[in-house]
Image (tube, rainbow, N blue to C red):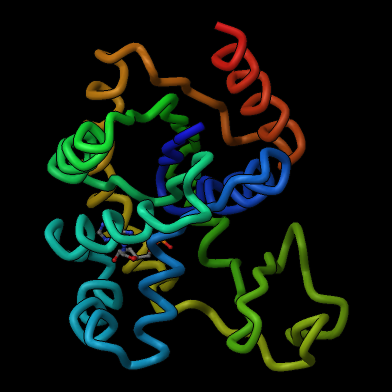
Length: 218
Ligand code: AMP
């Protein structure tokens, strides 16, 4: 199955994509993670992407499309994959369809995880990340055992630079203007499923699995 997961920042799409990836045995391709690794390594891609990411803006479409064309062509993607955080613009969605149609493939389902702006702001500004192993915590709902230190590494947790409140608000605006139009795009193809992302992680996961089962049976 080739799946697209999208939703506002903090909708839990990364967490859900990871769970579905484990359940279905297909890779999760998180463009945010790929870009953050590139920034950490200081590669050419990282150097190009960094300023956009720190400002909460989107990395240009041509960079993203060539990254995705390469990654989805790798051997572990033969049975399908979950695109987590890509496409983020209409141009990316159209570009993706072009790449896939050259391979006689298509997206099976686009999952939109919906949450309110208030939920996004609370979740992200209370989110902390381990700078070493990238484990995510939430100070309210999933706090570390030891005061502000990673349970696995013992390293001090940090606020991701793009999780500062002003940047979160920019990311929400970018989402509304650039990414939300994808809902119409996928709806018109009959492959959009809307999932309520306000519930507990397990409830959201069950709703996604139900949507996937319907599609696999049809
Ligand atoms: P994420 O972890 O998915 O929220 O992504 C973090 C940041 O990476 C975003 O705010 C963008 O700057 C950049 N990014 C990730 N995916 C894309 C994409 N498909 N197109 C453009 N920029 C992206």
